Image (cartoon, rainbow, N blue to C red):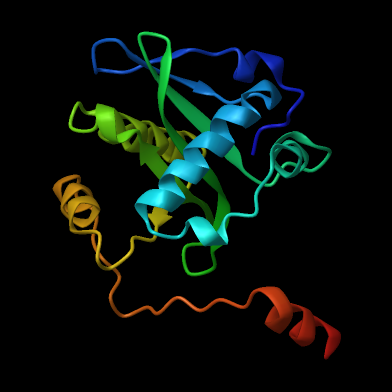
Length: 178
């Protein structure tokens, strides 16, 4: 993961094969736009009630002393239209790091233009560059447009795995039981 002090990385404008579409690593000043995309994604996924993120929390967790994730912003002719939030994970079987894509979102008005594919292709490029063995993400099982899109890029569903999660009070209780 890049350090928030690596200014050269954050000033990099990344050209894509999609005319007029560029990528840039987010900076702390982008937190309002990141939160806007998160809220749009949650609305699309019918999960708005779960969003408790704030600009202050994003600044702390993405750009503070110990950044825990990275964000790429996608721009069409300098207008922000997409984002991807990702972080490092690790495969014990491969003994290699990986990239886990937490969120990929393209504004609905800009879908179908290749922007999501460009973001994923760049993340795959970044994974190879960072010697990662995997690029992984989760998709809601009802999201057929996303599932079809990911399959068209060569992604394979890992149906034998079931995601488990502990949050909120259950997380606190489990931690306190130690």
